[in-house]
Length: 256
Ligand code: V0D
Image (cartoon, rainbow, N blue to C red; front, side):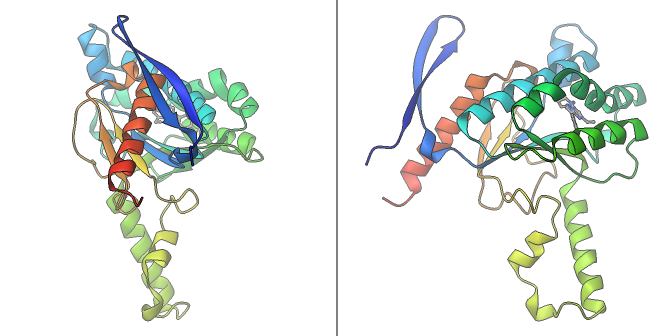
């Protein structure tokens, strides 16, 4: 039986054009993305690092649009890690204003496209103006039922696991749960991403081949895809390529 196929045109360096075929019946439901290389992108152009973060925000918008067209159900984007506080204060302050910018510019489009904004991470330490913007995005899209756009903000995976263990331990102490009842499913339900489930595909841009404390529990069975492209240069066709590679891996190793 043939699955539905889509023809996409991929353009490389404005010269070579290559058709890529995506199987629309096998699109990953949940894609997680480590949006790395914004600062390096800016430096390469002689711009301040924050210019890269601003450009990176525009790419979030483009990727959401493409993912939505392809029928992806959830995107988890690593926006700010618990380690990112070590950066220079002005850079952190700039980044913390991006959610507000993002809303002002893109919220109407996101609502029109039926996107639901969600957040995962530790609220403590995040400026109130950032939380206000994020809260507004979540509130104003909570009645939508399309693509879930889940931002990991002040997120660290070991911290998340620690919280889950602490919560579980206290419920065991209180006698609400028996230790024998603790299994993988139960542990998973204590993770911040429990609503969106595990990603089938992880994308990391900018050439680093590591997970950097991102979704360690959830990535157990995930296909990992790395590219040298800096996040501000990432395009819809890079997303298509990542999904195509994911589908080809499935064909090699999956059941017949
Ligand atoms: C900077 C590249 C959108 C990565 C993308 C506060 C680093 C741009 C948001 C955003 C960031 C978050 C929540 C929300 C609406 C928008 C965002 C941060 C960084 C950290 F409800 N882009 N973006 N948040 N960058």
